[in-house]
Image (cartoon, rainbow, N blue to C red; front, top):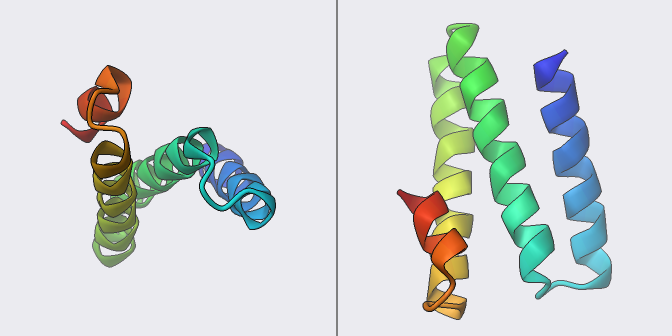
Length: 79
């Protein structure tokens, strides 16, 4: 159930980003969804899937910090 919810959140954020590619809130939501997918995959023992989703989450969060270096939430989420 958690994995399905995370995948749905990822689909929604991805779709919203097609309309507003630079929307940081949507990007942050997408990064959170990838992180949740990584945790679900890790719990299921799917290490490659977990690593792939986690790398995507981190890359998105790094971009958010580069784009808005004074945003404390983005910096905290990257830790």
